[in-house]
Length: 108
Picture 1 (cartoon, helix red, strand yellow):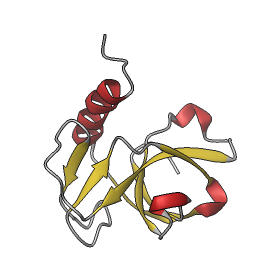
Picture 2: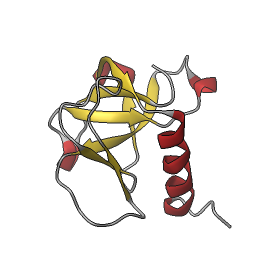
Picture 3: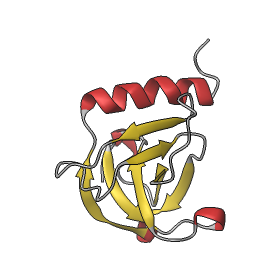
């Protein structure tokens, strides 16, 4: 699993059902037991600062157009992650980086 990969995760709490998530953690932490992800949802909300739209493609493995929930960053055990089903593009990850900087207060 590397940054930008789309995996299925079983998260605790409100997002407990298995759902796709994008890995946002740096590849420098590949050997850790946990991974930082943002879940995806097919329920669309018009909040561009915290929801990033992703069209389903063969490359990302999504079955339905979705939104990355950037305000729901989570750390999950790698054991709770399924196999990699696809990956987002470099352009998509750049847009996610910009929004994560805002959500996490790193934008200055």
